[in-house]
Image (cartoon, rainbow, N blue to C red; front, side, top):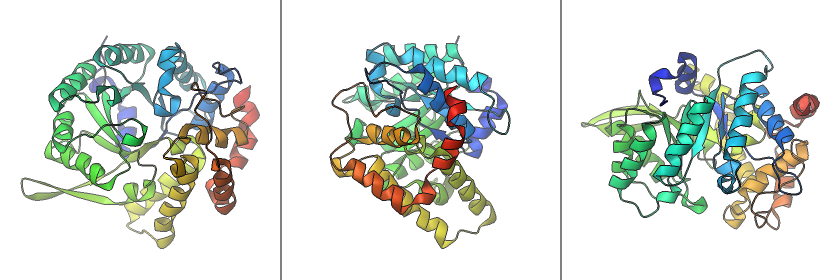
Length: 357
């Protein structure tokens, strides 16, 4: 049965539009590159206890290859079961559950149906498989998926498979009734403005929540008021929260940073230390995402942080060729030593046994 945005619990919708931290959930594998359900569950428990507002599962950070080895459903089931069964630190609270949707129209529609059957609230729709399609074809694809469940648009950076999407595409996309949000992650200021302009031109800024996926510009994306024009008048829009691969590590700190940003916006007091946090986080992300090697080690980089904390046993990916790049471990050493306030190692150490139980 299809899910409409009106069917999402009000507390979940309110959280989405208030703005929250949603980590992109990695995949736990053992040394044989087989699924490790114990550590997959531990990761979900960690994110929930760290204060995340939800989980994004089956997305780029989870490795798109899960679809090729029969892991799409088990991974989604694991996260949903944990979200339903785990009582987080501080007590139960709403969680936004987002399922990654990929492939051509038939595949994406089937994945949406699977996600709805498990209780997911929205689908993060990757268009990477639609490379070469016209705007008309892309919109038809999005409409078909949105007929099954609420959709979060995804502007993925080209370095990891994304495609260029026009302002006109984003305007038409934002007009689709069952679109509830956009994750803007082109790692490009101009392309980010294209998303905002499209949403504003569609008159959808109060109906479509914009989230940052720009791991290279997190703090300023969240702090900055964006201005776009509609009918000759300025419309001011804010990016409400983040759905980020970078927030799959040091997640408790990410939650605290987002709360600090929201407080600054509410009070109108934005100090230099908060502005400086942007470059610190970007420098950390440079190491985690392996910018030196054009993002080749971005997923193993996240895994390495989690391995050092004991949440994962190794950095293994489904693709044996996907590993830490030469020099990446040393870069991680550098940022961990240089920015000790960015990690949540003590929090993980205090709770790891509970999460692995």
